[in-house]
Image (cartoon, rainbow, N blue to C red; front, top):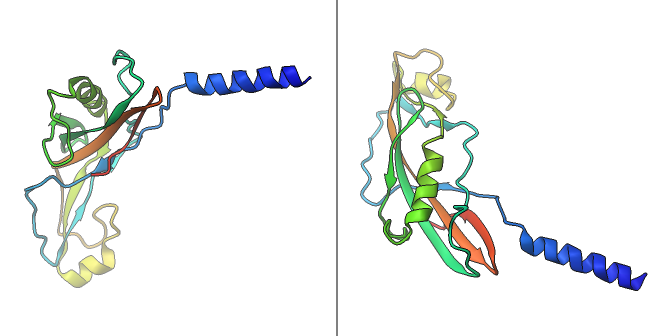
Amino acid sequence: MIRLCMIALLLTACSGCATRTTTVGQRMFLPEGAASYAMQDHQAFVFPVPHANPPPDFPPDYPLRRELPPTTVCISLVVDEAGAVGRPEPQPGTGCAMAEEAAPLYAAALARVRQWRFDPAMFCSYPDAATRDRDWNGRGCSGAVTEARVVPVSLSYAFTFEVRNGERKVASAPH
């Protein structure tokens, strides 16, 4: 009986080593020097709302390694008026790996974000600040709106790829 328990424990431990972590997180961030728009008191902005956008997977053809230190890839993209992703590209910045040094990881992240969809961003204008404060719900232009306009918006995301003790994972970036 003890021998059977030891075999079961060994099989359980080995199966844990053979699995890959597929949980992935991502983080949206504001790149250095990004342009911003100052809203007036009677205006509101609705951020694009992501659909069920899956995070990138670790590239399946990436060379097997026992260790890969955390490598953060940063991607900029535009969410257009229809909520589709356009112009995804590597985003240089502090804490972001150089595109040429992490090309397969960037390729995996770019391939994934090209598939993403959003409810588009909106720009809302109200007659005055009091009306905006009363009517705006943060999820869209509602109430006594004088203008509701769908607008494109630029976003940046960071993904951290890592291999630790042979286990591959992608996690939210500490950016």
